[in-house]
Length: 200
Image (cartoon, rainbow, N blue to C red; front, side, top):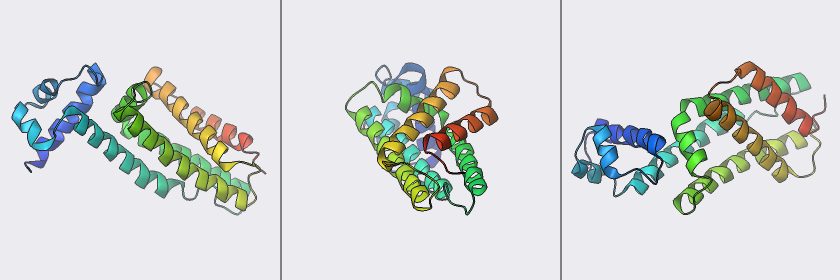
């Protein structure tokens, strides 16, 4: 059943906030509707369960990541000179930071809840993992073809790069809750290029 878009959005935002505060397991539908200021019946007009709304929240995040990450990383190792490649990589790193900062609450849900739980969490987390690995691997292969990178296994390199981004962002954005963006950007870029045997 369809209703007011603002009501649906209020439910989604309330769910994100409550999941973040209480954790998925401890959250009840009654908590979400109380935070959204609607009746429990209204919730079920839009979502059959808290699992469904959680899945929708995560799927929306993944779609945003897919669209923006594809757009922003398609030139990761483009360029005719090493300076151009380095500049492009810095741009990609800044843009990835922006994606996570703009979706910080959902990213926190996935990284805090998704790693340690099975079932729905495992499915969603593995979906995000596979999405990132595919996108990164394509860019590493492009860098190898252009002669800028010297690495034998693009798939392994993509796993290392994903882990580097994920843990760095998790630590600085969610644990320390602060980061020197410029310092982190420069550190990540240098680490990535050295790890991929970048040819200056």
